[in-house]
Amino acid sequence: MSGDIYVALLLPFGQEIAQEFYSDGEIVMEQPTTRLYLVRHGATQLSAEDRFAGAVDVGLSEEGKFQAGRLAERLANDSIAAVYCSPLMRTMQTATILASLHQLPLLQEEGLREIHHGHWEGMRRADVEAQFPEEYAAWEEDPFTFAPQGGEAGVNVIARALPVIRKIVVEHRGQNVIVVSHKATLRLLISSLLGFDARGYRDRLDQSPSCLNVVDFKDPVRARLMLFNDTSHYSEAGLALPKPADACLSKWWTR
Image (cartoon, helix red, strand yellow):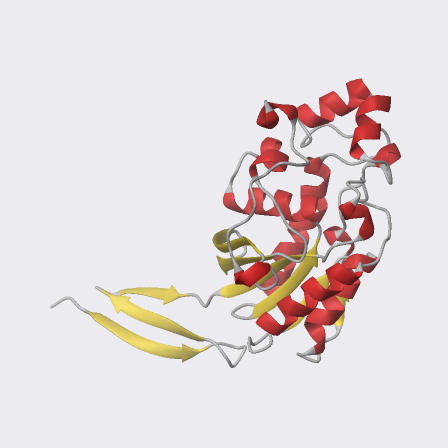
């Protein structure tokens, strides 16, 4: 007679339990879930001014510190195993606020840096479009494969950031981990993890300051998006609905 027999097994981490079951003689192991809290850093003065600030090292504004503090309160009762972040000041400050209630050190990863905008760094978007119209048009059309002079394309960011995510998932199997990064880097990572066409990441995905994304993994390559760009921890009256997109978009969206 066929049937399933379930056996609970303790994994090496000593915390997660997997289910091993025998179905008609075949052994199948149900893997524990690794959960990544992907967080964009809080607001800065440069983000408020709509400037390209990928490599520019700027700290959080008072608003950004408030946003990160509210997210820290939201995650205070979650069991967090580690906090990773980009080495830039704005991500480190955000990560420090999030890690403080869990008494965890910051683990810096170069691969989590923001995309580098080359000779556009520090410039307002409108000024870049006026001074470098051909270059800006090419980047706007395909930011995944085109990069401004001295900068990175989206594909370069994926090449350095995705291995970091894989390492974190492998090293923290069955645990909850906070990862603090940047707007473009997170959008590119989410596109890659979910199998989206990353060429349109700027228009199709958004990341608000100090937003929370939750991605679950059963193994390093199988990801499931559970929460996206959520700011209800600091938005007015705790509203989860975002405002309509009206800025930082390519021209085809605003036509």
